[in-house]
Image 1 (cartoon, rainbow, N blue to C red):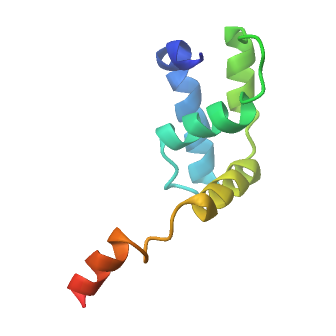
Image 2 (cartoon, rainbow, N blue to C red):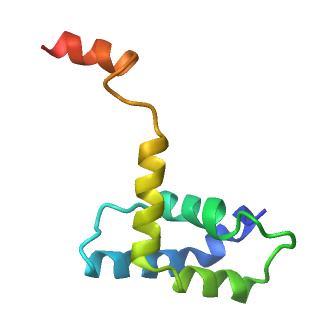
Length: 93
């Protein structure tokens, strides 16, 4: 629903990522921030927001909120040391 605005708001995403770098979080990618917005910030929206509301949402992201989200998502991910990851690890050892 919001993907059509992505190119227009890219400068604001980049600005927020630059802020993350100032706080020492230089590994966050634009795609990860975009997924955070779609999956967390706009997840329960019934109606599409206007452009200025989307920009406001981006600029109001707190580093701590994003990092909490990223931590939870990491725990949801499958364990790399099981399944295919274990096979790769066994080959390396």
